[in-house]
Length: 204
Figure 1 (cartoon, rainbow, N blue to C red):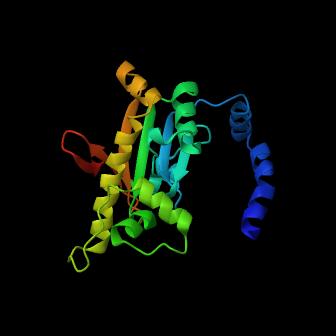
Figure 2 (cartoon, one colour):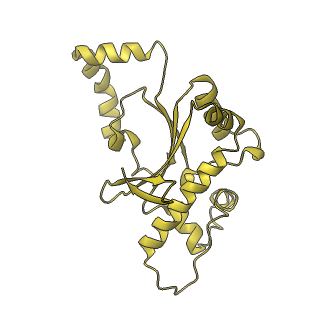
């Protein structure tokens, strides 16, 4: 924590010393108008502003284990509230669902790992990732490739879940909202986007 504390102590001074930064942060206090709702995993290795170049105020972020979007039918939740607020109040024009390589949540699901010691995690994955089949032992499929393919299928499933949300459905129908499925490779920095026409993830 020491490095975080030192940085936090120095941060106001760095803003005050830079005229442009001081003005930019001052404008943030007046309100927010993010350009996109960015839904991604809680994984500490996935930093949306790092690979998108987003500045403060540009991304409204929702982070969940395995970048899962709960079914709208599950009722009120923090995730549903975040999505509804972004679409209905902030009027974001775009929603990105971004999965990533080496995802622990997806790996646990496809490997059928024993999660008895973490029941909340087990319950979340059981509810949110039922569409991912458990891999047969000894299938001969490369583990990273298996996880990558499962993550990409999972991203597509989350886009389908988003379409269940009334605010999203209405935004899409009115042409004021767009959905995007991304895949981020932690080890190379490559970002791919789902192309509906090809039904494939292709480099941006």
